[in-house]
Amino acid sequence: MGKILLLEDDANLNETVTEFLEDEGHDVVSVFDGYEAQEKLYESKYDLLLLDVNTPGINGFALLKEAREEEVLAPAIFITSLDSVNDLEQGYDSGCDDYIRKPFALKELQIRVETLIRRGFFHDTKELINISNRVLYDVKNNELVIDDKIVPLGNKESKLLKLFMKTEGEVLSHERIYQHLWDFGEEPSDTALRTYIKNIRKIIGKDRIVSIKKQGYKFMVDK
Image (cartoon, rainbow, N blue to C red; front, side, top):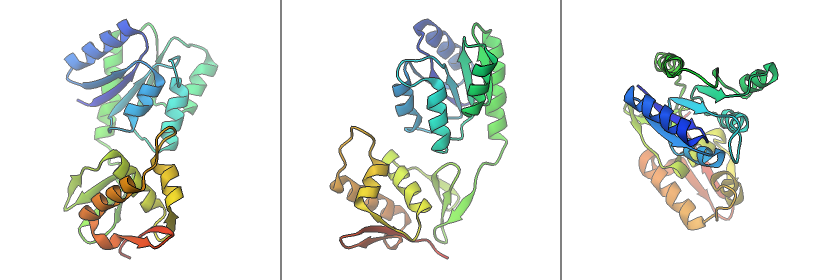
């Protein structure tokens, strides 16, 4: 059974699909508009994305395309009334794994959902980089692994560590970190940034993140 993000703006269908999948043992996070889905998508890790296309805010195609660019690898199914070949092509171009047209039988949905989740569980998606003897970074899942155990990180700490891993050895200015870490409409905070760095240092060691006076920070791993 898996954790599923469901984006469906039709309240009745949202409730029906949520109850059905939960009865089958899945953990479903259901939302009704694209912006809410976007927010939830980066707060947690999902085993499957189940996305309507024509939704308020960001539509499903744009949402998934952006998620793939941000290296969200969870398999995705579009559920939509759009039925042209062009729509189908756009869906797959945006990064989906399957496409189911409304109206659909719940049993068909269950088969498609569980096939993709099962496929994900039985494929090793890890690509590990050594930070130190005991600490590894899982590139695909953006997770720290210490002594073979996954160490959870907060959302901002996770995004910051990912940025550090991509730019290892470079001096990152505060401004560059602010742009990556804080979304539009959020107020960057140097105090908060120092807290996030302190939290990461507690896990991986103080010497991994070097403070460069009046310039920023540099991240170092063992060679």
